[in-house]
Length: 256
Image (cartoon, rainbow, N blue to C red):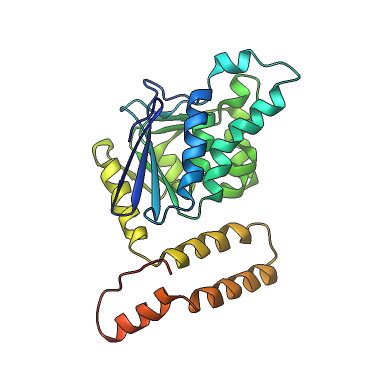
């Protein structure tokens, strides 16, 4: 499937979405109008168990928002614009399926925020990340970045607005893996297929538990974890996996 601003393919329960607005794959209103409704539609798609987001070409994953659109904002329109723009990122947190970003070049500003909002980040060796807000007089990424790498590290990156290399992002725990550009999509697809091969309900509940734990006490988080364990224990997938284990067979999950 191909729209004006993104290309989509679904194979082996993995949906790959390519931001298709070269050369820098910026986030325009046109992209938002396609991307957000499509992501909403994936939430209930039983044929999708993992999602990959990448950018068209070799130069940029996503270089951020359209500065021309921002330049037209007024005091009356800026809040609504930001709320709409944030849906690009918030919807990734809401997805029941894990979201992998395959960062194939520049991820600046809104592009940086997009990859921070994903569950797992794989970077090509030439990926460059930047919370560019202070370079254009704006605030970008503090909420998500501080939750990922802590207050001190987030402050240094955001307040300087400097560019972070792929290897440094890996060292800081922002990336799962750094790979050659030519191997990036293959690595992301392999990871997506591995996740898709697991019990979908258990994957969904695990993602929920991890996200919820960020804002809960240890005791509250453990109660949530136990509750989700009990939910999964009742599923067909769990009973099937136990039977397959004793029969020395590979389980084939249904998401039931």
